[in-house]
Image (cartoon, rainbow, N blue to C red):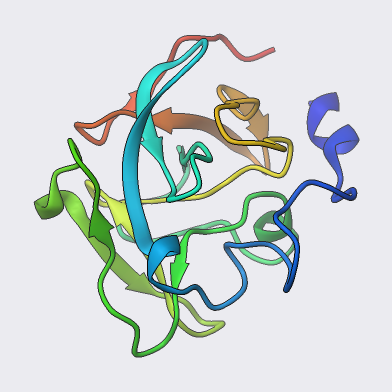
Length: 156
């Protein structure tokens, strides 16, 4: 899809200091998974800063398939090696939160078994530009409180 190629990794795509939040070690607030109402997709999972969290349809539950360059466009939500477990915000089911180890160190946060990611084209909280994007061999969807894909848009 053209959107993926155009999105790139331009300035302003991530919070400053240290690179993409999904790829750098994260302090406690980054591990919190919350819910927010996001225009166009409804009430969905977000990180502690209000950025939409996505699942990747080709992932097998508990087994991320987004690696290498994919992780630059779709940074995984991670906790550092030896870090605490992810924290559920209000409305998030703690029993559905877990982690899976990453080859690069640390662990990726999962919800209902789905590895969670951000999207570089979401430049600020409250955006869901990655909803129904076809990229890296599969579709990406925001995630609702039950851990299911929110499918409000159709892919091109």
